[in-house]
Image (cartoon, rainbow, N blue to C red):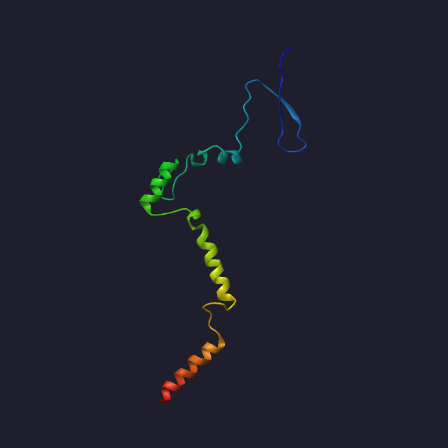
Length: 112
């Protein structure tokens, strides 16, 4: 009795299909990030420089004084907190009283 091989589809209704012994599934694009540095394959910088490995990418970044977004992980949260404090009047905001006081001081300087 010959051995038979089946694969199951990835989408509903998840049917089984018989395949030959030499069948190899097509690689999924979503799988590439799971296998070490495969996401670097064929990668080029905007100026055309080959950065198709982690080493080449790091060297390119060091030579061109650029960085990745993850280097600013904590600074964006801190900046958002500062913006929120500014908007709620806790720090650095200019109030109507501040403007009135500045106008009053300027008017008094002219008279003196």
